[in-house]
Amino acid sequence: MVRHSTSSKELVDLFVAWLGVSFAFYLAFSGVSLSSASLEDILLTLTVPLLVVGSSFVLHELLHKYTAQRFGFWSEFRANYVTLGLSILFAYVTHIVFAAPGATMIYGPTITKRQNGIISAAGPLLNLGLGGLYLLLYLLTLSLLTPLGGLLNYVGLYGFVINIWLSAFNLLPIGPLDGRKILNWGVLQYVAIAIVPFVAAVYVIFVFIL
Image (tube, rainbow, N blue to C red; front, side, top):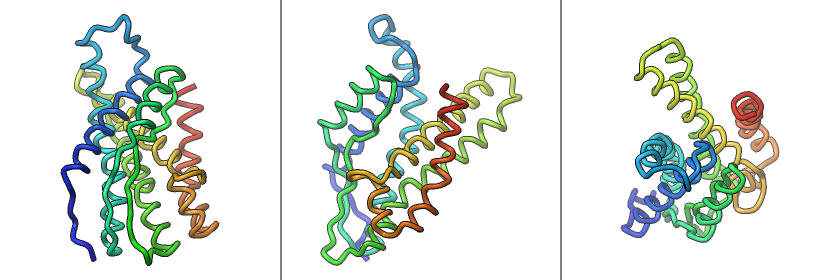
């Protein structure tokens, strides 16, 4: 087993990716025009995405890393500044987030399809679990008619939507996404892991977004 470790490069890349993805979700969901919004409005509206993405995207990548290390492989997150910039631009233009700020790099000459599938599944399943917790927060605060209750209710709804979106998006079986590696592990494994996030994502799109 490889000891859990990190580097200054990984910390910087995680921090930049966290800020970038948070800003992308802010642009997609806030409905605030950058040309007319004050700096104070932007900072206040960006606070919730920063907190939610910090507990969603960052933990997603760290769980990939630590799962890989449990198998004995070297693993660190690396940001891709080109795709991160494109994600922000796409969110600004279309109000849709394609969260592609980088990836957790894994090195292991003996890695199997099963191990790679488990490592890849760890992140989306974490987001699914976090989405459930945020949904519980949303439901528990529906009747709290106070400013704090309204804030917690908003955080719960926002966290649910973000985590379900991250889970379903990463489980798409295309390109370098987690879903492709899980599908390489096995069709039955992919269906078992992906079915709940995909159903939840469809629910989010039609009920909360449309």
